[in-house]
Image 1: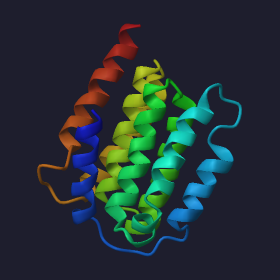
Image 2: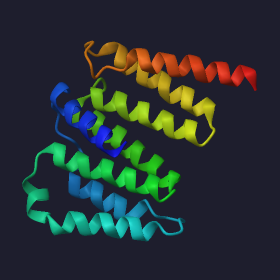
Image 3: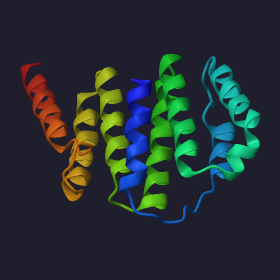
Image 4: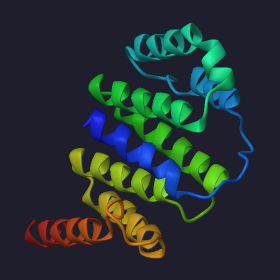
Length: 170
């Protein structure tokens, strides 16, 4: 899943427009350090590992392209999921939605994919109502994007159909 996410998000960068973010990467990292582990057990170990990775490559971080920065953020999401820290992963997905909109605009591949992935996170936790809402947001963005192999509009519509059917059966 981690490799798939990384390759998808690398492709996203190519297809999205370019806007300057209001929040710098360093500010985003500081936000993570200050806020993401509030009230969690074991969250510090995931965060410390992430910060160590970032600090070990501070020169690259300062001069790197957005793909490297975004890859680090998605790696942190994967680390949170592996550690079972769903709340932290959801918070980081929210942060990535803001980042995608600031960096690429309201309609971009990255935003559609973050909604798509967040929907699956809700589905894994059994929250089909929010899973459907997130997937509907994903389809709204995918629908406005060019149709290509990265556009998962049809997949998103199929998930919505399945999840709504599951809700009716319950």
